[in-house]
Amino acid sequence: MAQIQEKYGVNKALEALKVDRDTKGTSFGGELFGNGAKIDSFSPVDGEKLGTVASTSSSDYEKVISSADAAFTEWRKWPAPQRGEVVRQFNDELRRLKPELGKLVSYEMGKSYQEGLGEVQEMIDICDFAVGLSRQLHGLTMHSERPGHRMYEQWHPLGVVGVISAFNFPVAVWSWNTAIAWVCGNACIWKGSEKTPLTSIACQKIASRVFEKNGVPRGVSSLITGDAKVGELMTTDHRVKLVSATGSIRMGKAVAQTVAKRLGKSLLELGGNNAIIITPNADIKNTVIGAVFGAVGTCGQRCTSTRRLIIHEEVYDQVKDALVDAYKQLRIGNPLDENNHVGPLIDKDSVDNYRKALEKVKAEGGNVLVEGDVLTGEGYESGCYVKPAIAEAENHFDIVQEETFGPILYLIKYSGEIQNAIEKQNGVVQGLSSALMSTNLREAEQFLSAEGSDCGIANVNIGTSGAEIGGAFGGEKETGGGRESGSDAWKAYMRRQTTTINYTKEIPLAQGIKFDL
Image (tube, rainbow, N blue to C red; front, top):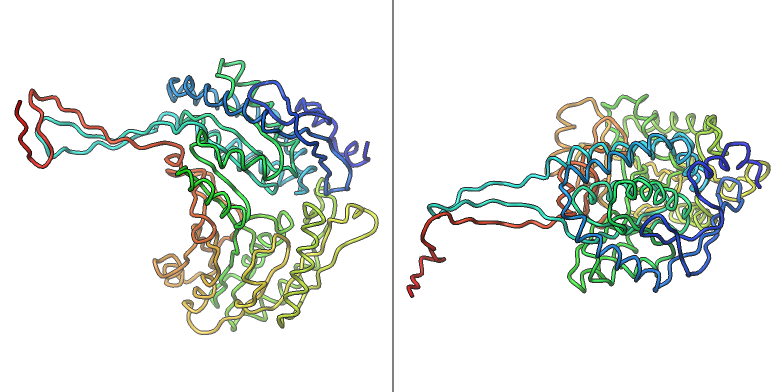
């Protein structure tokens, strides 16, 4: 077995998580099965094979959806606080296995070990949130216009919820959806990324053990594995009431159209082309720290990664010089080594996209300040390590308008009032995360006003990358409009019912109509 896997404890992590290297990737309980094509998981850390997973066939899927549908009819009867108690116990297991699951996330996906641990912590945090929520699934009481009547709203579970997650957050985004959906009374089917199948299996095994111990109906937590065709089994299935999909805009449009044809519900978390506006009133030191982490964290493979810096001409050179100096200090290498800042891209296709983006920005007239490159030699044998790059560009460049899922940062100059910068920031089709660096209260309020940022997330004096569990996460425009995690995002996983009770001895009819018999 590979030296890195042995040296950094990947083998021990798999053993603790009870994940076999040659396994099957379909489950609606404790047992894994699968008759579909084999998927090999190769780590971008060293290019070594981590394991092989048998994907989900159409017949496998039918077993899963039938089990989930049947499980839902029982699970919805459990009191919500009782469902919350099961999630609490699942959370206890996540806390116990946090180092091992974080290690597997880091090695299979390529993010740093600290980021892997942070991702598992997000799972823990959303479970904490969900447990509290299980006692607060409240509706509204409204005054009826009719005497002797009481009117209120209540919320019921939807049914089977499908979750399609991406490779860059191979476990956290699943938990954002399922922890909430479970306490709301839904059964969940998860299709994790085919690029990180073993992390999906590890999570399903943890959930299955806890659920079985508590007598939860088999099928409340299910797993399917494979490529886009496996995901299509859910998007076309009327038994799946909601499809929550995280990924590219192209993928999201396909999901939305397919689900809409059957009048189902979709929750979409798609691309981001996130910008930080830097005004003359910015704290430059903090700005540079936030911008560098936002641009190179997870090797630029976060949906909230910083893609653009929109910098006022008065501080442009100062910010530019500070960034170039900061990039000289970046350490690129094995993400399991905590001395390194930047790990690999997920695979060689991503490396090709990174190289093509750099070629495009040059062709459009951009000025590359920090040259990007694919790293070779000792420690870079996987071919997935690249140098984070910085380029001066214009907002209207075709390549700047796109989301390149890699560590390329575009510097864009603006002059005059902050509204000129806001127009540039909003001048892309994506609308996920945004940030303003300024100590000026008026600028901050303008940025946060109705004529300010058009993104689902708007930050002041912190970067674009990351989000807190307590707030609803999501974006506008071609980011899809979905909301996950905190606030009242739980309502996406439930159906609203308006209820009126007549406690009089008469039955008044609508519009005052008389209908005496």
